[in-house]
Image (cartoon, rainbow, N blue to C red):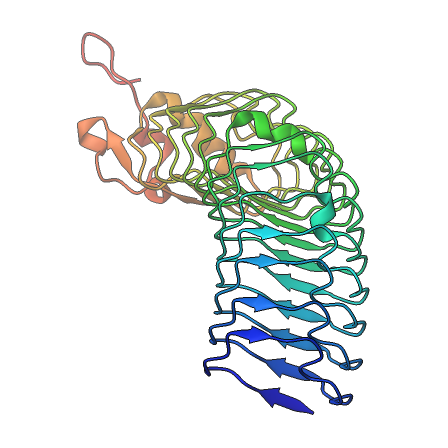
Length: 353
């Protein structure tokens, strides 16, 4: 049984407003003018599985607002004006699997915010006003697999913020203001597969920054301010398959910058300011399938001969994307079509070698 009350002018939900609808499975209250939910508003709905309250005028969620919804699986509170959630607001929903709090005005969350959500699988906090995530905020959400908090203006994440959530597979923190000191917060996420940190303000990646996340397979650092990658920066990531570092401020790639990435398949370094790449920078990556160096001011001279040798020795040979910028006679040449004989340097007398 389903009930649609969306797109009306409802302003509040009084106690036991839906009493007697014991077979109701889905209730849609989206796009109304609801400002408040009285305690016990959803009493008498023992079989409700889905509740949509998105696109209303809610400002806070009080304790016991959803009491009695013991079978609820999905709760959508997105696109409201929620500024605060009282501790215990979600207690009494032991089977809730997905909680949508995106596009609200939350400035603070704590461990008490999510108390009782022992079966929560997916949590969406995108588009709020969070500036910090404190230690143990998500503790107790042991079944959490997906956590998204993009577009908040996050400036810091305390070490230990993800304590008690060992099973997260996807963590999306894109479009924030995170800096280098936030990397320590990911230690202990042993099951994490995908980490998205695109569009933040990271300036460098230090040695050992990703220790403690051994199963990470995809790491996105695109659109940051990264100028340097320290040797050993990606130590502890033996299963990393995709690494995106596009649209940063890298000028050169040093030897051992990517050491230990034996399973890497895709390395995206496009849209940086890379002129030179040190000999051996891509050694130890036998599974590399695509190396993207597009939109970089590459100097294609004798110092890049090693790269061509490395590519040609690969089995199978990786696809290299990029165009030469210098010297003048090489400008515009596709890296894929350049031969070792083309990669020469000239002495002061003009002789090529």
